[in-house]
Length: 197
Image (cartoon, rainbow, N blue to C red):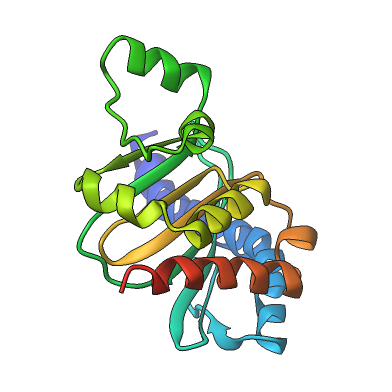
């Protein structure tokens, strides 16, 4: 019996690896094809890596990435759109929720108040430099861009010192990767990036 196992084991593991590899490629094919269509209206290309589904390009002088992040055990699939822009502070923006309100009441969450009653009710903001974040977000065009991105279904906005990143769970290839939709989003991100200068 041990001899049979010793002969079969070296064959089984590579076979399992090949099956997983081809299944992964098959399920990524549709995503890569949808991303490839972006090159018909944007300057860029789909990542050559078989393990990532991303389109990297440049729009109005800014480098960007549109990435399709697969679902995992604890998170749904995400559409991530990044615009590369350095900043000297970090910000995270989310919609207010029951959990965020509870976190604030028990003192676990410390948010940045923008001193705009409507905005502060609608969103909560974290930053490593609260004064700079407040000044940045009080710009009308920034508030409009933030509201526009959340209205488009994005659930978070973060500026991490190197890029502006937005995330949308449960995206659909047909709707979310349409030319006008991506261009509108990139324009909002560029508006946010310009105000970081």
